[in-house]
Length: 265
Image (cartoon, rainbow, N blue to C red):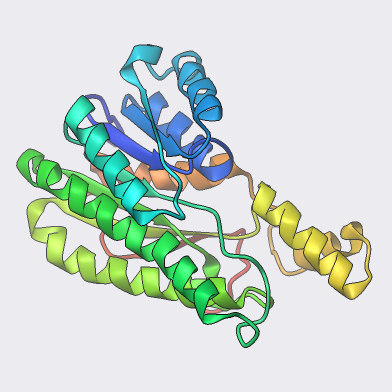
């Protein structure tokens, strides 16, 4: 199986921590040069330096661009700078923090608009920036890190449930449009994964229900056949496969990585 990403450059968003960081490490280990994007320059620099020790070549092979995903124009400018400075990016990992928890009915129009911009519009400008280079190379991989809520809404995450579905449909449309050029567009749907997002979700449910965090965790774990939470590295492994030459015929899918939590096929 050809998993080598030598000679490829990847743009990994939200790569200062969590799933994004794990994706950067995995892609670098497969030989890719990685451009890290997030809003904390110091954290990104630390990740960049760590990639050299993760089997991912020299630190000089990797780069940092700073952007706040609440600012679509900032993300667009950062992507253009990255391409101007480092050449075509063959891989885009679109990943950013989730919207605040709360019922769908209680959310304001502004909250929906901000989440739509942060999750879909940033993806649009990133793909628009990267696709010309992908087409020239005859190779492109776009992977969106979204949520199992695409298939089964998660209680208490109203805005997130709505926006993730929009991203999934956008990605499926792009998969059809870009497939003829050797470019695939897929979504990875993480289940409950040990990240800051899960910690925040558990804390919020505990406070709202007057429960201990341990009780909330036990309730969540009871819905997972694997009997445990996922690790960011496990999500990254699925992402890395979708970015590889071996996955060239995998296009337009929603791939749950959730320990079997989702019902149905």
